[in-house]
Length: 153
Image (cartoon, rainbow, N blue to C red; front, side):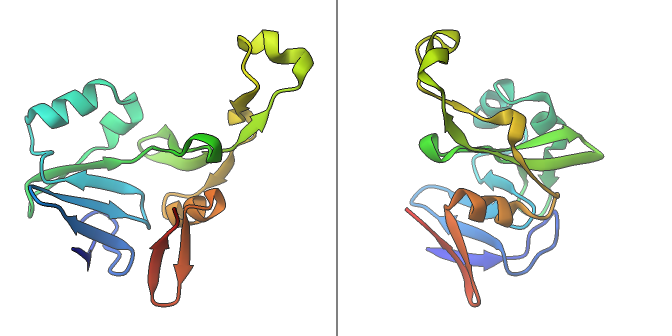
């Protein structure tokens, strides 16, 4: 079951959601782009494993939610052909980037190990810290409705 909650980071009351699963709950704020899960308790193997493979900025931005006793961190959304949304910058000055997947001209396939498509990170769209939803809309994975957010499949 999904319910709207107040985000413990940006305090948005309309764009942060808790999704209750059978054995855990997951959290996602479409305002600030942070996410968590009840399995991400300080020191938990799930959190340690996640942080071990996360970029330094994500590790540096992690936030301990004392009310739920879990750690939140910025998410990275990789939707294959639709592209990727990721944070970029430093702790005090980061933004959201949305990089689209683009075609590689046939004459350049060899430069890219035979791949025909690539992420266009050099021309990624930039969104401010609290415009995560706009990045998701640009990717085409959510719509902002007057009465809430709807995810697209």
